[in-house]
Length: 145
Image 1 (cartoon, rainbow, N blue to C red):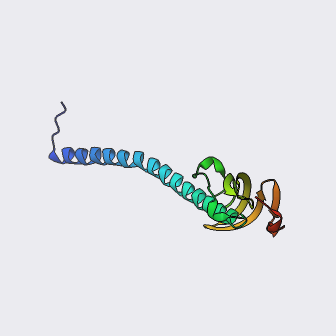
Image 2: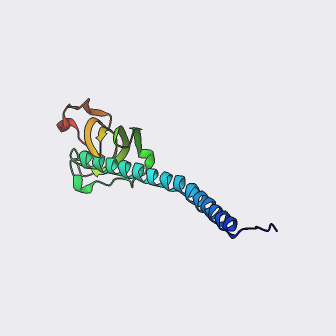
Image 3: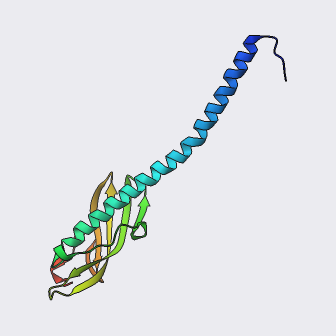
């Protein structure tokens, strides 16, 4: 064991080691929490976009009250860009009654722009029918799910 001649050196050494231990513990923990936070933010944007897509698809259904959407899954959502400004593409399906009362499964693609959490519908393809392209509506009334 090393003997120190001065109490002052022991004191400074103790402070220095304490700062190193605390600093390394804080430094190791920050990136982990930052990654979790970024993942949560990304998932929140993706969930909000998925909900926006369900609202817009329900508008074109013959009987929206019968609509059954799958639970959110990240595989349905493609996020291109940052979390605040991006193009988001949703590819999913909906089970709903058609005009004859039969439950049908229809697939859809919905593209939107995200600007700080405000979504703007740009592209919509429902059951192989192109209903909106580059923000221009084609005709919802031609679709019979």
